[in-house]
Image (cartoon, rainbow, N blue to C red; front, top):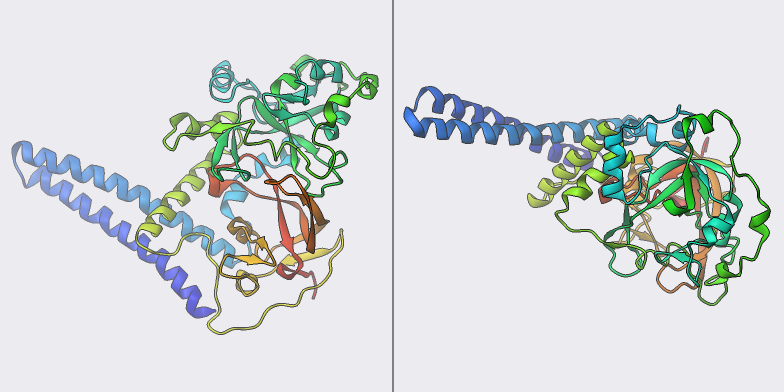
Length: 422
């Protein structure tokens, strides 16, 4: 293991040293142009050197951040991005006092997101009668279904957890897409009851038209303004589309139809995570600098972050044990996990997402076992030959997809985990 660890670390250090040296050379050239070369040529050399120096400083900072993240991983500490973005976790949002947002930010949200809701806002889900009036014959608004699993939230209050403006299209293009006017709510997770008891535990997406922002005076009252639940028992036949086998239709299978492509060089898309509040400013900077570092590493065929640790010799595969909800587990090291994966980074058909490397060595609790879920492409219910597990409070951070807002649960094989204490 030491050999590869040194290889990974050396790759990171090599980049940091190279950028640091470039800063020094650029500053020396700037001084030379300012004092050693006369007239216009000297000014041109100085200006160019300063520009190169500023670029090199940015790259050196990116390298330093990656080195810090690597070191934290070795020490078993929480990843720097996740640490800086803790204020955007559900529990933190739930516990935080009401968000006070400027008119400028609300205006920007309407222009960039299609609504004026931001993370932390307290909202009330409208009555079923009001929501039904917005739906077409298939129970959709702008191609996004309002699912039977969401009825229980009618008349209830919740905090905005994410603005669902940047999503990954698993179904067709496998590229990032934008959805106008949709958010995730704290605690609003699909239980699959209306779709064959699918166990994927996805966060439900809510159109702004289905919500009403609760004002400060209303919030102090402490109870929903319209809490009549009787209409939730009214005719809901409109919601039955896509709820029967053999092919199901849910928000995830309809995501492509309910969204639109994002331009590769979209300036507005760059600022959406900050305007919406999906990402804390410090985490936003760390994420983008890490992305920049990885792009440069790719160009020079270096090691990106995060990376698997590969042992010097094959130490064998870890044993797989059956887990149950409530079990305390430790995520195995990336060395052990890599030994279970094929060249496509899959174990028995389930891919290992590199974002999961952030949790190696850390202790968590098993939330649930996943045996069956809807195939996003075909809509058919699939039964896993080997079950997967969801860990409590562990979700896809979205950092590696420029702050994807879906916040999906990560699926873990038992072989990637070990019981705490074993």
